[in-house]
Image (cartoon, rainbow, N blue to C red; front, side, top):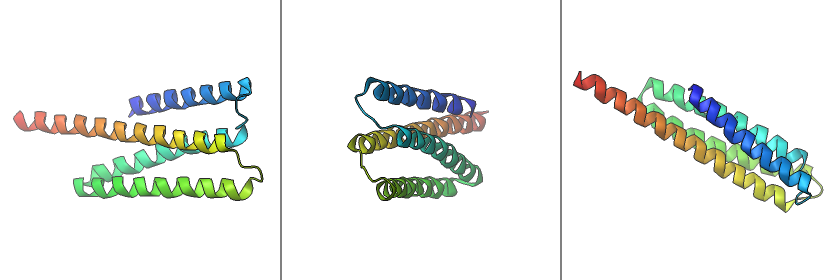
Length: 132
């Protein structure tokens, strides 16, 4: 699990550097909403992965249900974030919307890759224990 947090921090720091460079260069003016979105995705990923791992510890059927449930919940929360942004912001920035969906893609792919890696490691451990 430590490797997950390290990789998550690297992903978040990389996205933060890209956002800072884009804002400093004057190419975009995403500003505060971009930083809030980055923090939102970071926290959302931590919460969703922890929920999925807890479901996996209980049983395999709960793991599948938990994984699908967290993916659906993630999508709903992300849509809610965009709705709140559109309602509260008088000037809508197309660059922010594009940035937001790129973040959604990166963090969702990161979460899925981490879960697949964890499942492979768990399956390998199970097979090793059965052969001994």
